[in-house]
Image (cartoon, rainbow, N blue to C red; front, side, top):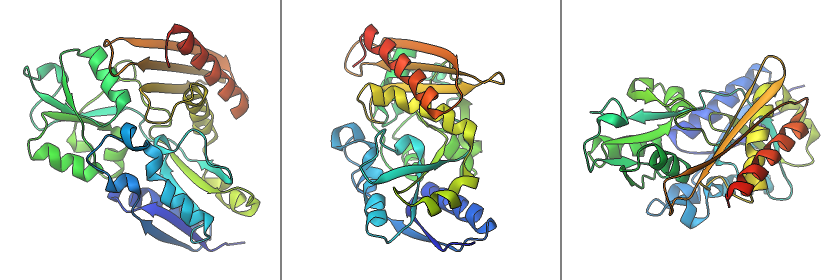
Length: 302
């Protein structure tokens, strides 16, 4: 039985691509779907880093208000932008198959970071990327870079930066893969929790809607991101903390989770932790994440 649905979405080009992707998938299942475009506080505040103005939750608050008021049924998010603990009354109803979770180096002149001349400026607004870059290349000059993907690329092309670091998934989804000069291995730059995955948020207590979204879910992705997000949640942090967490699911059912934490104000040193275990469900994946978080905390992460 088809259900008419309204998707709340940010109005950036990438957010609209993501919402249109979900819309097409739902329409293929027989549903009637429309989009409700919105501008969030995260889109409006561009002169300060997210960690200083409330974190990436600023990108979802207005969409949650639309769900709460009944103006929309679901919201589509880049999962790495979704707070680790949702407000009461909301639920993560679906996690879709993951795109490339890695980070990408984008530069009009330099094929790799190793080619940068002394004093060259690298742009990123991510505390995670900042601590990872500082650990790999301590002499880098890293400057804040805010705005949606197109805005960041424009600032790069205008010469404000020698290069910038972006999520490979967003570039690929918008057909901008040719802008990528280098994709960092997860050994070089461990991704953010949930990076590359799409999450669908709804109001809690809507089992019919959850059932309608179930065919879009990817169980393997959901297991891996559950472990990754549990690391941050257990450390009491948000998606703006200087933390990386990435899990891979192997054919034997084992989940391998790695995490890294760095102090953006301290020495360019990373704390690492990892664990591997067979997991049968998301609860087990979350326990693995809590174990890794405990190891990081014991090593000095906060």
